Amino acid sequence: MALMETALVYAARPRVVGKYLGRLFLVLAVLSLAPLVASVVFAEYAYTARFAVVVLGYAAVGALLERLPSPARVQPNEAALVVALAFLIAPVVMAYPLSISGAPFIDVLFEAVSGVTTSGLSTFATVEGQPRTFLFGRAFMQWYGGLGIAVFAVALISAHHMASRRLIESVGEEALATTTGTHARRVLLVYCALTVIGFAVLWTLSGDGFAALTHVMSAVSTGGFSSFDDGLAGFGGLGSVLWTSFLSLCGAVALPLYFFATQRGIGVVSRDEELRALVIFVLVFTAALMWGNSAANTNLDHIVAGLVTVISAQTTTGFSYSDTQSLTAVQMGALMIAMLIGGSVGSTAGGIKIYRTLIAAKMVAFLLRRGSIAAHAVSAPMLGGRQLENDEIQRALVVVVLFFATIALSWLPFLAYGYDPLRSLFEVVSATCTVGLSAGITADTLPTPLKLVLCLDMWLGRLEIIGMLVVVYHRVWWGKRVESL
Image (tube, rainbow, N blue to C red; front, side, top):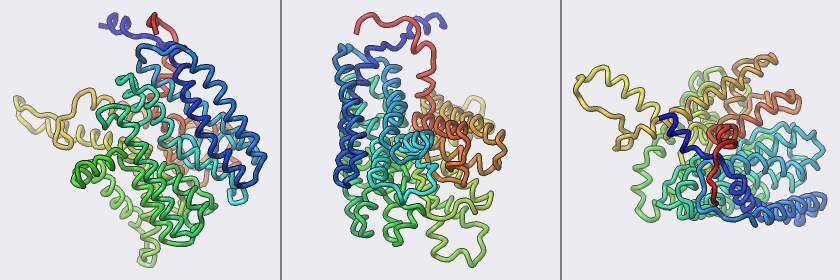
């Protein structure tokens, strides 16, 4: 069996990876026009020159790689490499224009990684003094990082059904539509609709067009970058805060579900297991966050603050609203569990995902139940009225184990540097689940090695770790290759 598996494993072909990475670079060149135009509108021409270099660089390299011959088919490992490398290269490139801020390069790189991976952690002590192009650029990175790269990559190789489906899965999506091309178009349509509608309403509520735009891009992408130092509290109006939180919830719902609701009726939404679980988790963790507070602290303002904070954690958006540094150990634990669970599969949210969490819970219940049924009885784990397949269970449990292993290994360097165990664990969970809430550890004073650890965590979390394993797996790079393209 081992010999058969070895014979069927083919290394990635550099020309194929280069071909589709080149196409993705052309897409990124077009996307990078947005901050370039913004810099002209804001008359911040130093940014204009640097974004022009980015656009021309992407276009030149993309056009060169695009000339490589098209393959007859794309292997799953090649598709996964395209996405993994895109999320690795994009923040490095975007760090160049953002470095005008004058911050050390490691902090600028941290900001770019946090943006593209939709994490939202920041080492900047203040952002309100930054140029508008800087604030727009990092919010826009979250917008296209949240879904743009994945959707465009799927569309680029949609003719190769199996490979593009695996590509979607490598960044946390699963094929919920009949074909990957259809899936990409539907999801992109929903994504843009949420952005446009969300912006129109938030602009009306806040009266601040620029703040509305940056916060909507961060909300629908579940990214969490704010143009205010105190996060959502900077809006000053409860309506703006609640609407932004609602948009974060919308981003954490499986995006194809919106399209199916218009085609098949609202009943599709009410029957969705993940959506029901998302609402229940938000309510439960809000109650946990409020538990232990004195009666004086359970007024409406504190309940709203708790709800907004839990939505921010559960959807992995990471908008700050209240002081997370003053939370008790129980409250921080509740938020960490919420961040770990995350949003729905097929959404822009990070974390393990609700679907995988439900699978793990069903497996525990199944194993407990097996001990009390007759030996000859037929029993199988069920979810949503259907039997779970072995491959589906294995993939879900592997991701769960890898997430916990990554968090444990990343936590150790913080302990070695002498940071508080609970707060450093909170920080690592926030980075790995691409959330952005901070216990006060992430700052410009954080040692460079720990900043790099968090950067790696954000990248791993966005790729759900499996994507990174594909990159470092030796058989992906060395071994027998298919002769023809």
